[in-house]
Length: 94
Image (cartoon, rainbow, N blue to C red; front, side, top):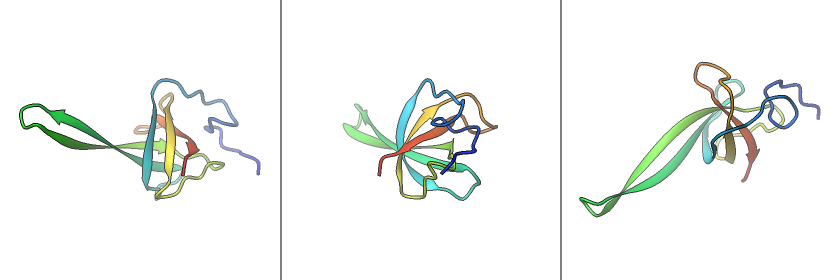
């Protein structure tokens, strides 16, 4: 299969740089865009408990990778691709 997406980090000129993250795809409804959700825990000394935090990041989903809802993916920071997208999917883990 030939990749015609100019924003593909594997086959074309988008250079991933900066932060690389891993998360779960929670939405793939938008065209060529997926929403990645990442969970983290931070310890609160006052209450001696962990606080669960969740963040959502929109990322570009190239045609050749084509991540779906429920996939665990790697994303990498890149130049600004649109108003909200600054990340691109670089690969599927599961």
